[in-house]
Length: 251
Image 1 (cartoon, rainbow, N blue to C red):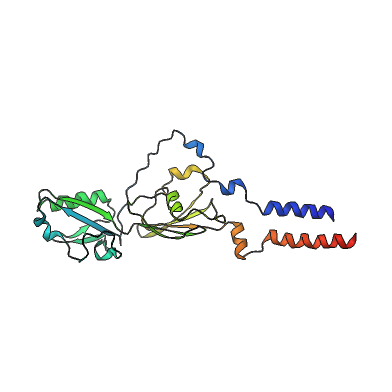
Image 2 (cartoon, rainbow, N blue to C red):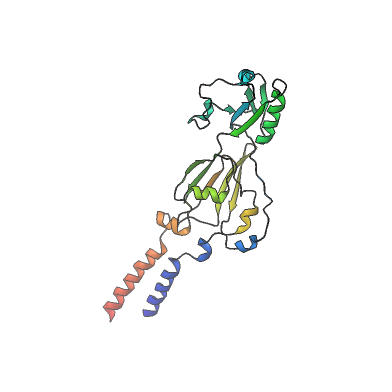
C-alpha cells in the first residue's frame, strides 16, 4: 500500500506541472543571431476594404470636384469609417468623383496612390494622393488575457505584436498550435503556428493581414479546468486520500 501511495503521489506531481517546452516562446532563438530579415510587408487591398483617400494640391479650389461630400471629412478616426471612406465593392472597385469606377483590388496602397495620381494628373498638375486602409483590424480570441478585435492604425502588425495587444497568452493557452485564419482571394486559409520555435520569423504569417483571426487553443490543463474531460490530478488526489484512509484503518 505504501508503494502504491508513493507511486500515485509521483504521478500526481508529474501530471500537475507544465514542462519548460510547453511554456517558453522561441526556444531556439539563438539561430536568429546575425540573420537579416528580408521580409517586407505592404497590405494588399481586398473586397470590402474601406479606403481613406486624401487628395491635395497647392490650389485647393481645383480639388473641389474630386472631393466626395459626406459631412465628416477631416476626421479619419470617425467611429463609422464607412461614412467617409471609399468601400471596395464586390468587383474590386471604388467609385471616385469625376473618375468613376477605379479598380483597386489586389493592389498595394502605393500602387493605388500612383494610379490615382496619374489619372488625376490629367486635371491637376501638382496633385498628391495619400491612401490608407481604414478597416485594418485583427481578431485575437481564445486563451489570451484580453481577447478582442484590434484596429491597427499603421497597417503593419506581426503575430507576436497582436498577441501582445491581447495581453499575452493565458497560463492555459497552448503555445505550440496557434490557429490563424486568413481570407485569400475569397477563400479561407488556415495555418497552425508554433510559438515555441523561431521559424515563425521567416513564416508568411509573421506579418498579419487585415481581418486575420488568431485563435489560441486551451492546453490539456485548460481543457480539464473547463470540465470537458476528467481532471486526472483531481482523480488521483481522491484515490490518494482513499488509500491514506485505508492505510490508517489497517494498521
